[in-house]
Image 1: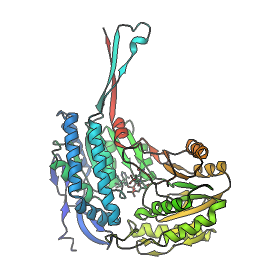
Image 2: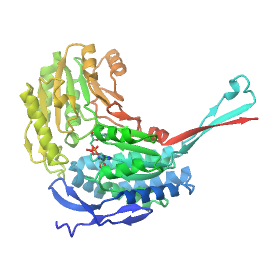
Image 3: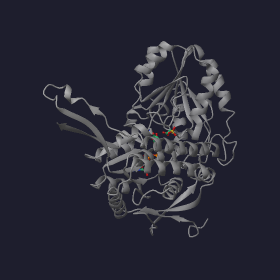
Image 4: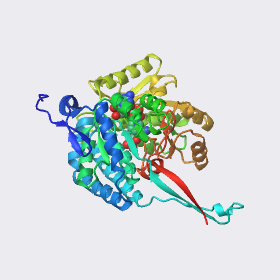
Amino acid sequence: MESTTLKQYGLLIDHQWVETEEAMAVVNKSNQEDYAKISVASKTHVDEAVTSAKKALENDWGPYDRYKVLSKTSALLLENKEEIAQIITAEVGKPIKDARVEVERAALTLEISAEEAKRIHGEGVPVESAPGSENRLAFTIKSPVGVVAAITPFNVPLNLVCHKIGPALAAGNSVVLKPAEVTPICSLKLVELLLEAGLPHGRLQYVTGDGAVIGEAFLAHPDVNMLTFTGSPRVGELLKSKAGMKKVSLELGNNSATVVHSDADLEKASSLVVQKSFNSAGQVCISVQRVFVHKEVEAQFLSLVKEKTEQLVTGDPFDDQTDVGPLIRLSEAERVEEWINEALHEGAELVTGGKRDGAYVQPTILKNVTSSMKVCKKEVFGPVFSIETYDDENEVIKKVNDSDYGLQAGLFTSSLSFAMKAAKKIHVGGVIVNDASMYRADHMPYGGVKMSGSGKEGPKYAIEEMMEEKIIVFNL
Ligand SMILES: NC(=O)c1ccc[n+]([C@@H]2O[C@H](COP(=O)([O-])OP(=O)(O)OC[C@H]3O[C@@H](n4cnc5c(N)ncnc54)[C@H](O)[C@@H]3O)[C@@H](O)[C@H]2O)c1
Ligand SMILES: O=C[C@H](O)CS(=O)(=O)O
């Protein structure tokens, strides 16, 4: 489509949509054609947005009113599910059946946030139990941190925005949101629905454009009280290094491990590993990447995962039958292909897949890998998982922990003692027993350790991080 005929979306600054002269194209990943344009925010735009966000805090907005706006927006998301799912599929390349699920999850995340808005409270503190404090009364109160700057990734462009906006607004903050420039339109639709639901003036600002420019402006502005970032470890580490005294929450990458023990239900394990390695073409932070299989069941497990993988449908993400769509960029698909070939050159063996067609990469399984190969050591963020075998429980725990990351891990076993031993010793933010690493209920605490980040999301937990607690002591 001619760029002159493409619709250009604006920035939301001080409750006004502002179109900039400079624009960025948004590409439909299913056909690599431009399908929309977004405005490009300058530092001045960001400064204006932060000023408006801070001014909005002067107007009271109570918990029940926050509940009503978030709950109404959740309902509006579901009313517009198909339109928004189609947008997600266009801008991410995510199969339509998975995009529909994302809209449902996003609505649930906002509903959970709405409910949590009604449950924010401090606590009584028994200072009187301290000698000399017999006549004192103490309790805490919680207040919003103020202006929350939120930066989000391309792969789950609606629900992960809801995981930031929902808790931030539920806690009484104002938000300046910068979505991924390659998948911004679905979150713009969310912003429109929040305004329709009655979001007060200035409580949400929406800026699009170059991540580095906007990120720099966020960190430089004294009135940004917190930065919440979800994205690559590279950018997360950069932002944290420049954040100074600002609160920072980081949800970063992973090379998720899943263990299949000798006593595992192999039919269940093979189905879930295949489903949760190739969902979204592997572009999920907790997708299965490193599979450790006990040597006694390797042959059977390999046969099962090969068969199930070769049944997957790779193709047009708008087709209801498609399981695996394109990667976000041609360059990413080329990188994944390069890593596969590098592993094969270094001695890995191909079980299935391995080929690329444009931005599409076949679901790929490698075996006889070593932990030093990129497909094991780094975050592939593509439709590839590798299989290593192990002999005993302590060995596999050590292998799982041999990683710079620590977001989530999966473990298939029928042994309660091994499950608990591994759950305690594996150094990650979450261990999923009898499922693969890629499991998340949107109300559970979610976040990693090491290079996977710091801080927890899930509305109840994100709200805690987006508030400040103050103790008040009365000397009666
Ligand atoms: N832990 C989680 O919850 C979680 C969830 C989704 C994705 N991720 C991770 O995100 C990554 C994939 O997403 P991505 O490719 O969008 O990540 P990315 O880091 O390239 O981009 C994420 C966001 O940061 C912005 N950005 C880029 N450079 C920046 C800079 N210098 N300063 C400020 N902002 C900047 C981008 O515009 C985008 O909005 C993977 O590593 C994945 O594991 C983690
Ligand atoms: O990509 C990582 C996401 O956090 C996984 S989920 O979509 O939130 O389950």
